[in-house]
Length: 176
Image 1: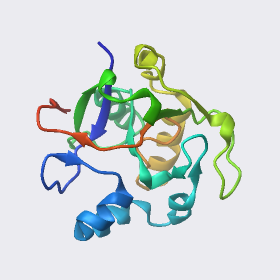
Image 2 (image 1 turned 135 degrees about the horizontal axis):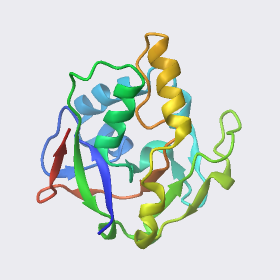
Image 3 (image 1 turned 180 degrees about the vertical axis):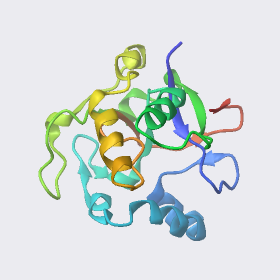
Image 4 (image 1 turned 90 degrees about the vertical axis):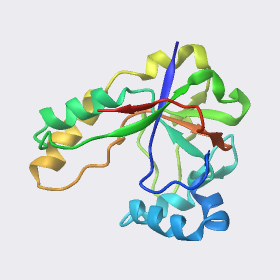
């Protein structure tokens, strides 16, 4: 079975995961908390996702890379191993293909615009091809941690972008 992962947010209300822009209307306090994740890179929130014709924050973001691989890469890059990562484990078939697209991180981005070549159709049966930790991400972790900064966890890792909400009631949680 193919799985996707979504980090468990620090604050969750109810049993539905909402895209950030939807949270603004439903739970403005949680929206304000999550907005801090974009400090210094607020412009990406205005980027439109080609094909889906919506904003970057109108979708839920998933990764096919197991959280244990992300944690291991962070540790190998020099981060202190005394931290825990928790993620929802999502059956890849739960996401409707017509509302889902893969952001590949394969081509350089034009400032203020997402490159359409960086997107490909979503097929739940092919998720495994996005499940390996990219070397570019490991190199990025090493550089950023070496500078004493906190890296973006999913930089250069393909993102599975889902335009919709997700019921998390029965989803397993992976903690590493």
